[in-house]
Image (cartoon, rainbow, N blue to C red; front, side, top):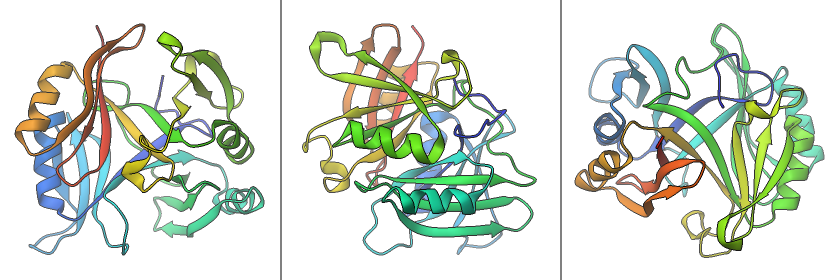
Length: 263
């Protein structure tokens, strides 16, 4: 369960890097019912914010890093981005963007874990994060596909203070690890991680990767919109016992995300 009190270690923000801002805005507007507000005027605006029912749900920006794939970046709340950066380096991670002030809004940094999975942190200022979570059209879960679950648990536990609980997946298909912020009860679990093979990591060139899960009212309708607008579906729609009806999707530029509806 993701909430907007944004305790340390919990997801608080996400943004999409894409080669075509306008096309991505139209795609997610149709699939998730989002509005898009560019940050500035004119044809050359390279980013803005997504909203749902007047509440901010995500950011959008033009992909500028050479060789980077279109993808969602998930940010986790920290109390001190500089201390987190030191912890990342001690644990063998890489600093991709050093701690940077974004005016009065907050302080951010981006990293890669030791196996290559990319993530970010947010030290709040006037902005604590997104305004809407855990409702249709908003973030409801985060998920890491990794080549080494034990190493990922050690790294993120040390850097973000997470604790974990493991569950066997149906059909004996491996173990799924639930993630809970330090000091919070089990019902505040906000994500999961899973060890997968090389085929499942091909999307990121063999490296681990995070993706967001968005709540939707109707999974099949969301999937139909994905396909109609040039996206594709990697898995589903299918029912997952105790979870809901879900599908793993790619937008037209290859950024991955999951849609999940209660059943």
